[in-house]
Length: 172
Image (tube, one colour):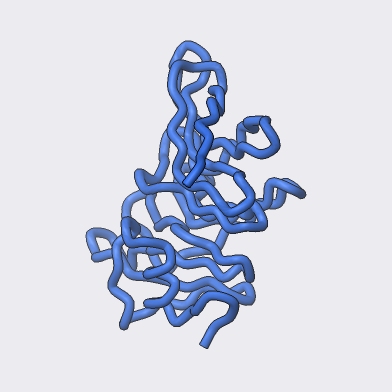
């Protein structure tokens, strides 16, 4: 198997952390800003790293990886008015979609962890302050909780999609 190591660069700081790579070589992750004064999420394609703040950037950020599908659409989250919500981002047109939540826990409502090529998104949300994480699936503009899907954000994307009732190339 042949592979090539590519220096993605940074957003001005000293470190970059890649989270996901898709089948066409696009990469998402986080990179330190100039002077290492914080970090922002980035999207890398065709040799260029772009700052995609406010996606998973700012004072409130999710600790899990940023999801990426083969169309370049990103699953993560967004700080809106001091509260972090699950969100998706399309770097081709700059459109950010806040997915809503099932509930919140003190400024953090959840995070989108994976998105398939049909735009079906999964992640977790809190039901209430101090409550457990609860898996969700977002499709056709609506978020639905899944009581049969108690998963953590660290689960593999494919596994999370299967548990949420979504199979590759379609859904059940």
